[in-house]
Amino acid sequence: MTSTIRIQAHLIGDVTEVQALIKHPMDSGFAKDADNKLIPAHYIETLSFEHNGKVVFAADWGPMVARQPYVKFSFKGGKAGDAVTARWTDSNRVVDSTKTTIRID
Image (cartoon, rainbow, N blue to C red; front, side):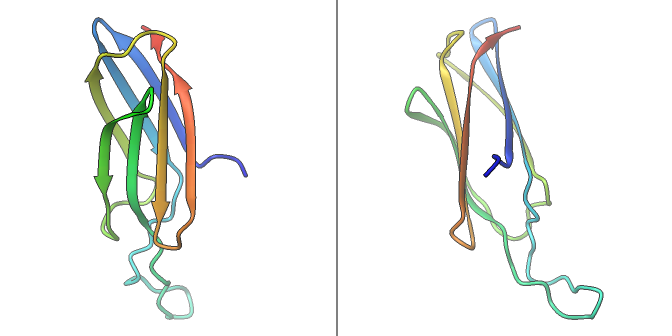
């Protein structure tokens, strides 16, 4: 399976800036399809980012987050070449993760 997460991490001075775009429908369970039937809820529940195995960002999400969510945050302590891993679990217990290395900007 191809990852649903596109992630970049750039070192700017002593701060690592991380940006991620996640391909996910984030269905709330309240919308209807063309036949006027409810689309079942299907959304990301947990999202986390780790730097060399330590969590640097974590979120508990629900059905009201927009589809194809975009996340941007920064943290201190990263070095060029270090690993940053993104991981999510959704309401259907599907899990995806990917990693990148920190680059210098």
